[in-house]
Every structure is written in structure tokens, then in C-alpha cells.
Length: 104
Image 1 (cartoon, helix red, strand yellow):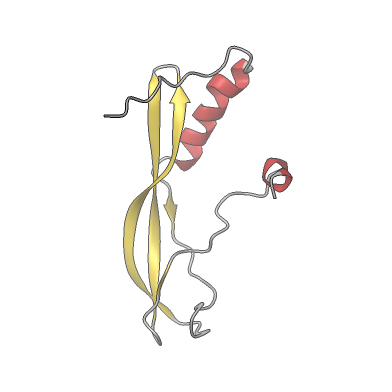
Image 2 (cartoon, rainbow, N blue to C red):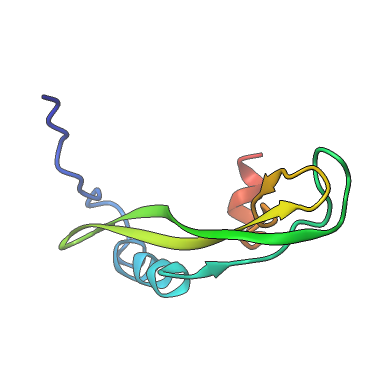
């Protein structure tokens, strides 16, 4: 069986990234509900949706001094009334950050 290496942050990483950023991510996103309706159906371009279900999804895994911590969020899915396609909420859940723009 595959044995993964222990996850540690490098000693050159500033303390702010080691302690404050995981704490901020955990407080902001832990058990958060995302339930925005899609604007239009991708298949038939209809604008009328019904609620379908809510599911729990893994958002990220944080490396903390005590070990790894999984952060879960709840995602509401919607069903198109016309064609029956099940869609998620709008995709842009993260705010526009300069970091995200650098990797596009």
C-alpha cells in the first residue's frame, strides 16, 4: 500500500501563512452553504429552475501544526424545469483576488 509522506510546511514560510491563513480559510468556508441559482440552463437556455438537493463536498485540506484538516462546504443543486439538467450554483465562489489573476 502507498504510504504518503508527512505533510509539513517549510521553515522559510512566514508565520502568517502557517497560522493565520489556514485559520482565516477555516472560519470563512467551514460548513458554508453555496446556494445561488444558475442564471440560465447550459443545455436549453431556460431560466426556470427547481431545487434538487444539497450535498456536502470537500472544499480543501489545510496543513496545520496539529495535522491535516478537511474543510467541507454544502452545495445546492438545481434542476431545469424544461430539460431536467441538474446544475450547480454559479461557479465563481471565490472572490477576485490578485493571486487568482496571476495564474490565468
